[in-house]
Image (cartoon, rainbow, N blue to C red; front, top):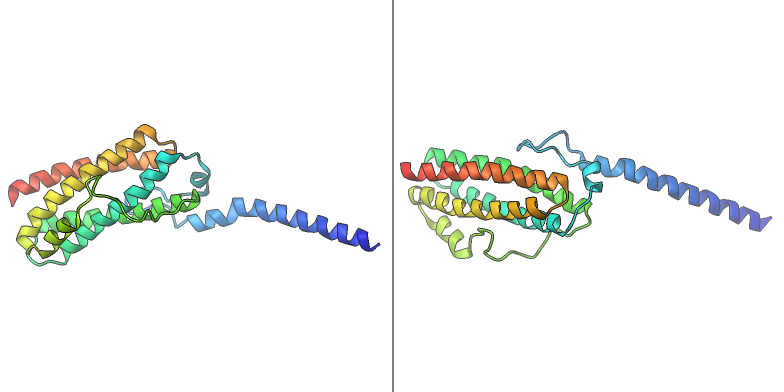
Length: 203
């Protein structure tokens, strides 16, 4: 009698665990990923379907490296926006860069978490258009007028690096949302490079 009671309890526990597992894949992950529609950059917020989609090493590398690349672009923009005397069109550009890239960072971090990847790479080298410490110091120490031109020059190189990273994802990635973001970055930053080159002629 006692043996039958233990067997029944074990069966109930196994059933409960199976139901809990089904509930997890269909509910809690979706709630954790859904932050309401779309980002400020126009990219749809990641969904459970996206987290379950196929991905490969190229997708992971793209997301990890682009997060850090975007973070530096935001740091550069913040440095510029803290200054007086910056050309108003350059201010507007820096604000747009922040508005677009901040939500993209959130999106990519959510992908990495869903893929079971550690988003902290421990730093990147100066490839991919990344600015060196000396570059960042020069921007920080420049006055507003000088910083306007320096920011445009540095951000042009930064964007060129991002476009190369994005193209590698388009060529080698498997996750459809990651590839779509890479294409969006390529189009948006190519347009911004043209804008920055035109602004440099006006300073």
